[in-house]
Image 1 (cartoon, rainbow, N blue to C red):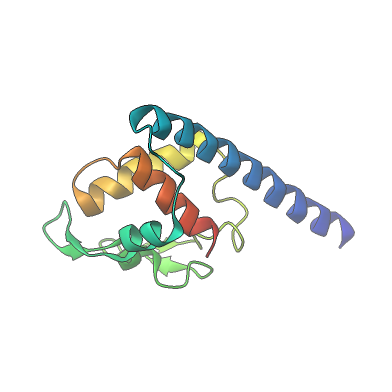
Image 2 (tube, rainbow, N blue to C red):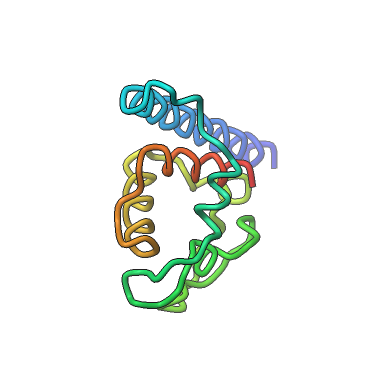
Length: 133
């Protein structure tokens, strides 16, 4: 039991440092792009995550359509009905454990919902929202 708890804590710390590193990198890029950048915002991230748009398949969707309102619970992909593990890294320590994977899914999901890649600001805001859920 102690080993499992230690592993769980390590994965959470590891994920947290990866997310912190990613957000710090995005913040530096955002500051270069916009010198008045003052940080990522959870409320803006929530708006991006929950607002509906005509997605790439011509249906009105939001991130919530696939990930649900409670990011600590599993949900189903709106289009394929495949199960999606909890998005919250608090509930699923495997989330946000590699920058490459974070970038891949942000790019894919922004394209699915917004028909475009997210901006640096949007990515940082969404990640900030997700890690605080």
